[in-house]
Picture 1 (spheres, protein in one colour):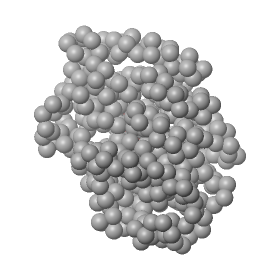
Picture 2 (cartoon, helix red, strand yellow; picture 1 turned 45 degrees about the horizontal axis):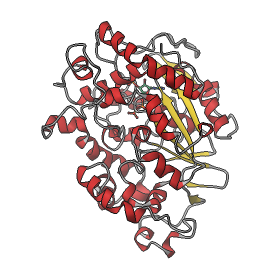
Picture 3 (cartoon, protein in one colour; picture 1 turned 135 degrees about the vertical axis):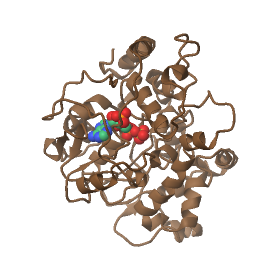
Length: 421
Ligand SMILES: Nc1ncnc2c1ncn2[C@@H]1O[C@H](COP(=O)(O)OS(=O)(=O)O)[C@@H](OP(=O)(O)O)[C@H]1O
């Protein structure tokens, strides 16, 4: 039996009655999934057919996904080749390809690619460089809106000067949570003519902060006056330094958090790692210390679900009014409704409506009738909506009990009941 803790969600779009159990729709090039290539990570139906059965890896496991590996805190020895893959090294290589394909204007040069993917962002060595250079980068340039070439010759060659509009800092960020449905939300929002979003996850505020704000802005798509710049990096929500850093960029930043039943989220997180590491210990072995003893909150797949704790850190920097909490479950059962709330929150006209979605019975998820830049119907790739491994009911129940007080606290803090208990 496939475990889906959110199975009770009542479908609102027609035909949304069952979840898929296999990934028939594949993204043979996982990089397309996070790169903002034409059509973003969505695959047209013919493409899905062609790609069926291909490698499961995703760019988001390396430069995407981004949250600490589900093994963090449990694996002391240097990772084996296979484990390295699970930890995202392969993903980083793929991410490189993604960047090449998706942001050719900026990343068409392999050297540049190397810098972005490996150069201090997301690697241990990089973390060292990062902390060493934080002092430098934390000096916010006096006016980042003056033409960058007057200040930063090194960036001049990277960013073509042509094209309408300007590159701006994001006014809104999807900061989490990993496996919450962040990719779906971003791709849905990209349908809006007043939203321009970076396709890949830049991981600036967690891994790449040492590169400086000007570098970050140089990654952004150009926008015209009135358009909103966005990016999504799900690991932001759980990374200690991120709220302060985002506040440093702009205290007005709007923050979107897609949350999902933490039990299902943890299993989804585990499923992602398992897809790349077949020999992984069982979910149960990783989630509990001894048998069904203490829940292991050092395991990131468990820790990420302590939403109340993470939110408490953010609230030291941002008032609650700056947040929108999107239900990952409703994003599946009623995508137009949830995206409607997001459009309101962003001050946008409700352009994305029911008319944009259809339920794809094979995928088991809502898909777009026509994705941004594409011509036909598109679903997310096969790493979105994976079958989950079988997890014993006792394990699920034990985790539900564990999360209950944290969930209640989270409902209290946000004023929203997500119905997970
Ligand atoms: N429309 C649509 N299509 C496919 N998948 C959808 C969709 N809407 C939400 N979801 C759910 O998104 C889950 C993946 O979440 P994220 O995109 O946040 O993952 S990641 O952190 O970026 O890796 C993914 O989790 P799994 O089902 O566990 O794979 C999906 O349940």
